[in-house]
Every structure is written in C-alpha cells, then in structure tokens.
Image 1 (cartoon, one colour):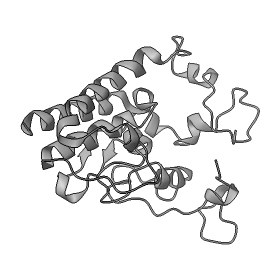
Image 2 (cartoon, rainbow, N blue to C red):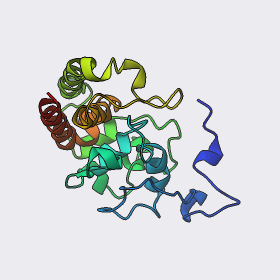
Image 3 (spheres, rainbow, N blue to C red):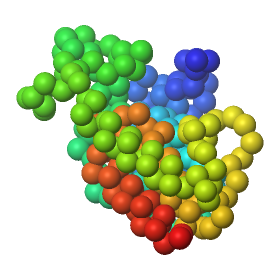
Image 4 (cartoon, helix red, strand yellow):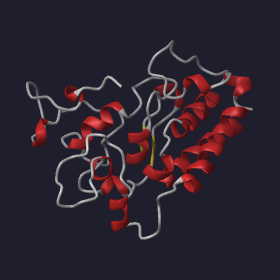
Length: 214
C-alpha cells in the first residue's frame, strides 16, 4: 500500500527510543487522557485519527480505540469516553497488531494482522468470528447515513477518503455533525473490537443530531 519502513521508523530524525520508532505529532484532541505521544502507539494515532477541521473523518480507528474524537470547530466540542480496555494494554496498538501467538517470539509481526490466539489470554470465549459484534454497529451507522441522504447526499464515497475533493457541509450543522459521527464509526471496520461502548455512544450522538436537524 505504499507504506515503507520510514512511515514508522526514523533512524535519521527524532524517535522515541525502542526500534527507532518515529516521534509523531498527534492530531488535535488526541492523547489527552493517555500519554501516548512518546510511545510506539503515537505513530499509529498520527495517521489513524481524523485530520483537524475536515468535515468527514479520513480515519477514525485510533480515535475510537482511545475514546477521544475531536470534531471540527463548527460541529461542536470533542466527544470522549473512558479509555477502552485495549487502549490500556502495555504495548498499545502493538499489543494486538504486532503480537505473535508464541510468547517466545519477541519480534513484531509487521503484517499488523491480528492473530486471535493471543486474545485468549483475556477473552476465554471463542472470538474467532467478530461479525456478531461488528455487523449491528455497521447497520446502525448505515441507517443514520441513509436518513441523511436528503440533507447530505450519499456518503459511500466519503468513507475513509484520503483523496478527492473536500466534503461539503450538509444543509444544517446538526446534519453535518450526525454525518461526521456516523462515518467515524462506519469507516472503522473494527469499531466493535476497538471500543464498542464508545462506538455506540457516537451513534447515539449522531441519532440525536439527526433528529435535531429536522
């Protein structure tokens, strides 16, 4: 996908120590409840959280994981929740996305795929199929976006759109806010795993904003 070693590692620039992980500048509104700017997770959050002042979140998984979503100024204050259980793991993002099933293997898995086997240290139940948690949140976000089509147009092309023209505001500020919150959940395919309570809270906020926009 065009991400080279230097996206995360900075041997000739400022780094945070272990493995020369790049020192990242975090987006506005993140790292307030957790001091992650100088950890290996900081470089993840810098790219996997919304950029300031965009009307559609280009990325959201780190924001959901942290329980901190900073909305653009016109759309209201940030939305926050207690940190998720996963955000409190010692190695942050890499606790799941770089972990190997064999504890003796200390090398980071640079595929960043999640091997479900280490999850069983905390999740005694079989979590090999997450669809039962993922699909209801996705359907709920899609319903908000469907109801917003009259005020905002279709949002399919705007989910996690890193390229293309900037999104235009909806007919009302409340509708634009509802779209932002719903897309923050919809654009994270693992929202139910990263932080399901926060994802549900964002959708509740989106539904309230949608009702207020009518």
